[in-house]
Image (cartoon, rainbow, N blue to C red; front, side, top):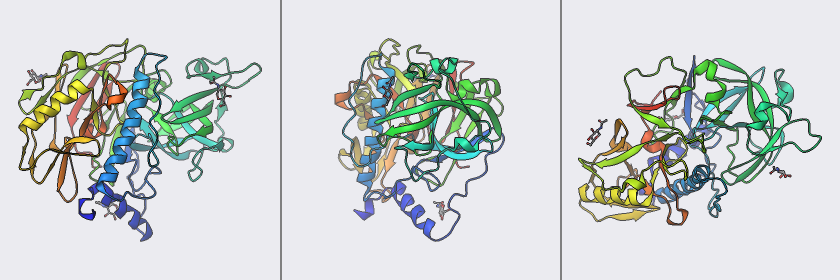
Length: 442
Ligand SMILES: *[C@@H]1O[C@H](CO)[C@@H](O)[C@H](O)[C@H]1NC(C)=O
Ligand SMILES: *[C@@H]1O[C@H](CO)[C@@H](O)[C@H](O)[C@H]1NC(C)=O
Ligand SMILES: *[C@@H]1O[C@H](CO)[C@@H](O)[C@H](O)[C@H]1NC(C)=O
């Protein structure tokens, strides 16, 4: 169905073609000061770009949604109380549970450049290291032997106590740890080296040096966790950046566009709407906020308060996640929003469904606005953050979904499509998260 191709898909194809004919493959603007460019994971410069573009818009949507489902399973397992576990769904076509954005990081001295996935719901950073078994072989890996500032951490170090599942068998000198990320199991040594994003160098940054990986959910050049736990980037760079950052995520409409990650309190928006950041001591990496309602047009959807309530004991509540593409709501919340949306939409055609989206229309659609109502802050989404269109304009869907039936998730996830073209400000010292409209087209 060539006419129904999503612009995303066309861009992937264009970009692939442009590689052959010369224009600079990755003409990204240089990172400066404390501002780092954020690239699309599927964009021309990204190592995560799919090798073979999808055949149709429907395939692309199915793939993006299935990635989201596997991420939701992962987030739910992070949010749920310990001991609860989920069986990953059978992977479909090359199911990668990867975040959607990458940034350039420089590791070691002299610096080795890596394009690492950005994940604000994770703490750890890890990079594939030379000799890693099972790491994606086509990608560069970090050569520790070529860095003069590299060092391993001993088993008794405080950092070794902060990683999940440290492995320090009797007689072991160096700390290692095991981790599951999406559908992959990872074995890594705990090490330190210099890390720089933009121009600030962080000495002795603690990260995992991947030694062995099974499964295909691992971002090829590593991951940088921007969560809130002790080993996250924000915690380890507290003296430099005061656990403060903001990002502007570029729209999926143009994979060429880059957004920015701005580190530290300097240059952050002064006048910005904010909502309190909630702490869940059991799941310290996640950025929980209090979403109290969702307005569709002028009417607040009839959502039972329990569907939105924050509960540290069960992990229920709402998080702001950079790695999920389409907002997922627990079923009672989603149903209420969807029903209100369907009542207010203006379209000549009937409601259809497509690849996991249940509220789609053919032809011209006038959609009501959607406002996320957080404690103290309403965020009204621009139409591009609410509806996803096929490039031919023939089908338009509400770009949100309920958690899959079989998952029993209690987590509402405000995902990156809904955050696109906003500056989202994470101000941990003042326990707040801010939203302001901005075009992320650096
Ligand atoms: C970590 O993984 C290794 C290799 O798969 C395994 O031998 C070891 O038992 C694991 N350790 C823990 C604590 O899970
Ligand atoms: C994206 O970048 C490529 C190569 O730099 C260029 O040829 C193409 O026109 C750009 N596309 C858009 C939509 O800007
Ligand atoms: C958000 O919108 C609701 C409903 O329209 C309104 O009652 C409330 O005062 C608004 N909150 C803020 C912080 O503006």
